[in-house]
Length: 339
Image 1 (cartoon, rainbow, N blue to C red):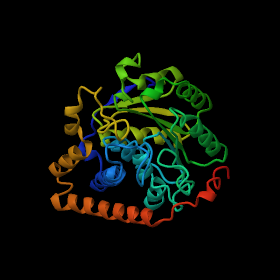
Image 2: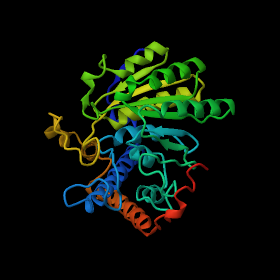
Image 3: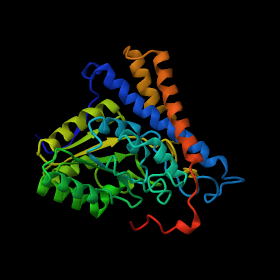
Image 4: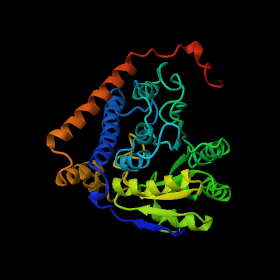
């Protein structure tokens, strides 16, 4: 297999069975529905004005709207025995990888029934049941993924690790060190780069010397592919190749997806630095995929509404659960932190 990067064209609709295509949409819709609800809850009591420290969900909030195709396409090939390390913008991958929505939502609210008993918040979601973790430190999900992939290999398991980061983090030392070691030891890991064009407020063209980070795979003797157009079926196809290689003992791969960040870097970000902001709504990948599935006869309008209704039901249940979960007692602030 060539180790030079390739742009993955859209896979023809006939390549994927209708049930697979519907499942991809269901995962994306659930992620978006959950984040829209969290966005409303987050802003509901931040006023007057915008006080980031106020409300039932205080602190920063990084939403992944627009990037759902990456998580849906990749995680479609994973089981909960596989490990995923995500970024500070982790919700779409957590949901696509099967994290319990109730426990995840309770953690966002800082409640005792959350994944970390309310200690971690949205940038520190850790779930042993699904081998999921994330970090607010740029590119620092890559080295832990190598550790898990190394353990899987030593244990003789066919489980793999998936390490996710953004295009800005591809300039970090941890990115290059991880690719090098994974290639050297032929570890069962798939590296994912979400290229949403912006590292906070810095455009990729001002931070990265090459157009495609997927080209960097060749330096380490591993395959690299770039998926354009935020195409969930293109991601699915590229991930199938990379996951298949990893499970077969053929070593790591790098996939870069040109996606879109539909919202600010964080909630409250005015995004005055984005000249293309007016064009972003038209790039909504969920709306585009629904149109595609309707045109192909995979779904009708009633089918789309059933998917949306099922997502709303799950999200409403999770938020109700989180709000009914107790707030940790102040005297337990040190509990669970180091154990």
